[in-house]
Length: 149
Image 1 (cartoon, rainbow, N blue to C red):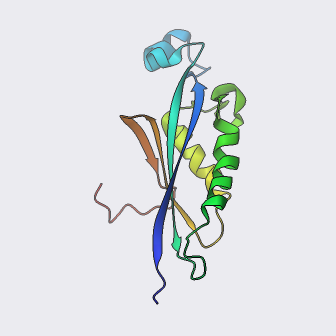
Image 2 (image 1 turned 60 degrees about the vertical axis):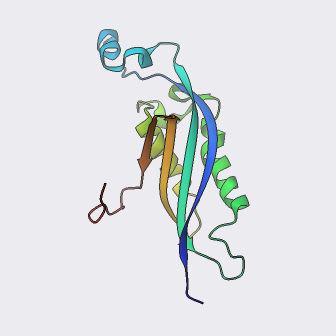
Image 3 (image 1 turned 30 degrees about the vertical axis):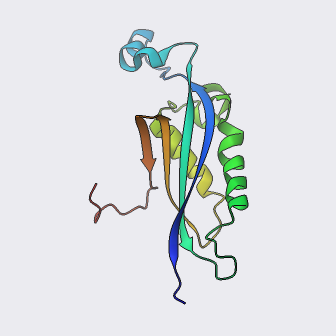
């Protein structure tokens, strides 16, 4: 049997609140740039996060990664720090970085990547803020040269 590598994806759901705001800007500039997302009381979303790993199928288990292990990684790296949190105040990463969908996606990738076992690659994270707005992140080392985007 040939060594086979496959992509495996898992979805999770979490809820977070946030505010788009840059402290160095005036209130007027923040309102101009961020509009209603600059509401001082924040706003929230029901996020959907799709995580895709890539790796060899283990010959004994038939799995790239045990879903129980992947779920534990996602609980530790995403659910615990982000679910039902106001990101600007409760997550250190976002105290100085605007918690846009783009920045939340990068955060998710970096946090998950820390816990992925050796021999498995975190290929992509895809974060849906709503059904018609999502961001994909493949990490800094992804090669897009031969991709048709």
